[in-house]
Image 1 (cartoon, one colour):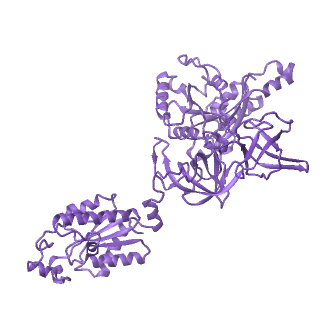
Image 2 (image 1 turned 120 degrees about the vertical axis):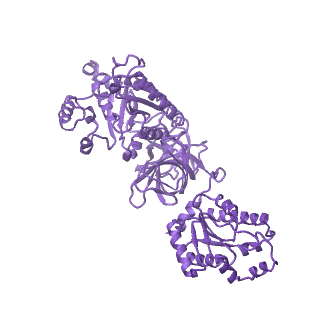
Image 3 (image 1 turned 30 degrees about the vertical axis):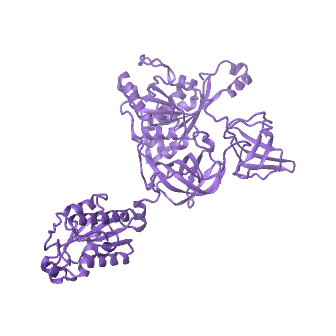
Length: 632
């Protein structure tokens, strides 16, 4: 082994002691499909002399049947151990490997590149301090490169190494390497602050992995392994805020009661004053007990048992914090959620949330925005599909002690569990805890689309236009009764009714007619926003006025129904005697007689209420509304 000196044979105890004191780095390899993640890990193990002879013989043999590198040994087989992985030449599950050098110990997580297995990638990244993001030099940055980079950023990985692989297939071109570096830096501006490193490598040939490359003398910053040995991760842990989630109460006899768990953050000493989050009870640490004896100080990541000077009620799910800590429990918080199941996340549905050692019932109250991993642009969403990433507001039934993930990852993360199947369906990182004083609504939680989905209809304005006596109001009334009877949410605005209230101050001049239509249009627009099918019956003789209302709503939400009943039939009907008065000169500006009617040019629906009965008209309208997807 590369780090194994003669000390192993001369003084094994000293060697083991030195090995035990080495710094540990957990890192992952991630990126798009076939970027060479497994091959890179195999190359690291091979060139650092961390492969035993029987392992090398086994993969040499397997390379002949399952390998993808021709006559060469396929080093990817060291980590792609599942039969389905070898058959397809891809990584499916997370594979962990251990190796060490003179300077540091390493635990590597090889994660899948396929979008289908993004959930596995997030699992591997959750415990890592560094991520190696592989990019195929031929193809450059892909969708999964962006997705994995964004997930690493969300998970608070502060050190990102962008390894541009397969440089041998682009003739070790510095120009190509610089192009990818420039493109990635432009993309990464929108990620959380992270240390970025760029290394050109060929995992297959071994260039710049463990040993410097003779083919890329233009790159002088050393091989990848040297970088992994030197990255400083000592200051990544939160040593300020004490967070000790209690996992188990150890009560072996009457004389001992200890609280077991893994210290999530902060440094704990005997004599420290603590507070139980939630109940507020206080005490002082008496001892910090481990299998190897009592400790004078405990650090994040250590599994310990804590005894207190006072007998107080503490159980699994409680958290110990410093006595002067400002942390309080909360039942509402915002979080970045990564969805990991084929069934989309539903707003309002109850799930179980596991945060630390606590399991509570909760729900996503709303999706604030979903993030497009290609552009990092944010857009609204009603649910969250597999591999979707969104910022959500979450409410739980029992209070939790949570930190923002950036401040304390181990006390700021949670998983979402389906209550029926007990399957983990999502993972989240807390952004901010909420109280009644700091909840800020950035947008409406109940949207037009959500109202419409509840009513199983498309909100719209159905605008009936035609001459006086054409049958607009009669048909609109009958249609509303039919829709209401079918279970749809509707409202009817009729010209005569509106004239008595909302527009009671208006006359019948062209100017007043236009204002009449504008007011009715504004009301109808509000009702569409409320998710309703709004029926409006107005003569509305001028095209400009009808267009004014059409422009108020979104495309497809204004349906013009031209009740094309002839003037002769309308005048024959004359239900209010208005035509007779107009012919006698008793009414000025009467549509069809002394004032023009502008026929709709391209109405969505046209009916002749002089030829069709009311029942036939309604049947025709229902058919058209189904065609327009207003109703099902």
